[in-house]
Image: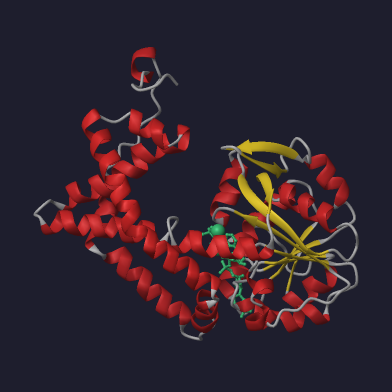
Length: 365
Ligand SMILES: NC(=O)c1ccc[n+]([C@@H]2O[C@H](COP(=O)([O-])OP(=O)(O)OC[C@H]3O[C@@H](n4cnc5c(N)ncnc54)[C@H](O)[C@@H]3O)[C@@H](O)[C@H]2O)c1
Ligand SMILES: CC(C)(O)[C@@H](O)C(=O)O
Ligand SMILES: [Mg+2]
Ligand SMILES: [Mg+2]
């Protein structure tokens, strides 16, 4: 454990220095990790664990053909390391519950009857356990219940692993039946390629995660972009102009500067005119959206969001409804413009950086 000062608040986190891969391998050397579900997180965590030298098998319901076929295409062999859910749970000693949150309820009876004493039940979200009034997932007392929740899409969990980086994850122990739950949890966190791991509880994780994805990370991002694009278009600006001023400049330029050294660094690298205006408008936007974030937090804390997920995502026709909603976004003028704008990006080889082109204004790098 390392104690790190985060802006004046001290937190204890686990970095790869304190818990390295060799230690993780030794903790899990006699374990079989059954990854149940081959959707987004499933493939990423399973492949990272396998590449890191752990003993991994997949449990995937065959009737979800697309997911089963993807597992086969990724090299998992039916009958060898790819099974239906029941057999994978029987063979596994760590059971990674990576089906959709709404489906945890559907698979739980099968998982439960095939668990053995001393197994570890692993989640990447607090949802199934915290909302067990909805999911009916109540683990037996003789298994460990642990969580490693990557703070990013499974796609990035895999991509960042392959390019030598990681995705930070939170971790928590809900039930320690074996006395080894925390060690197993951290070993799995390191095994899936986490950057650093920060402690949380199942409850804190599910609340912050649901707020984050409905808020800045996805819902607010999409809504704010659409609002600005619409206003620009209504005032006669072309699609190119509206899209570039709303999305393309953010993804290709400014957010990269935020990523590199924070918000003030990005501001420092824009004109005095831009800085003045953005600093003046920042509090207005904050004031305008804060009530919406408060409403969102309350909706999560009161379980309304979880109940809606269970009600909607478990429906027979849900995939069709989802495809329709995403299709509307995809086919809108704004995002069709985005597609064309991306095609027009120059794809040239990286140029050698010389001193004069490297110089960015603002504070020294
Ligand atoms: N998507 C992400 O990148 C991400 C990030 C962090 C945490 N998580 C968490 O990881 C877990 C897995 O989420 P995901 O987004 O990877 O899921 P997903 O929607 O991509 O995948 C779902 C898997 O569930 C299976 N499935 C769906 N309904 C089923 C049913 N009724 N019976 C049996 N199998 C069924 C599918 O075949 C597929 O293998 C969730 O707890 C989620 O909150 C996801
Ligand atoms: C990738 C996210 C948004 O962080 C995750 O929470 C999810 O539910 O997919
Ligand atoms: Mg989430
Ligand atoms: Mg998340």
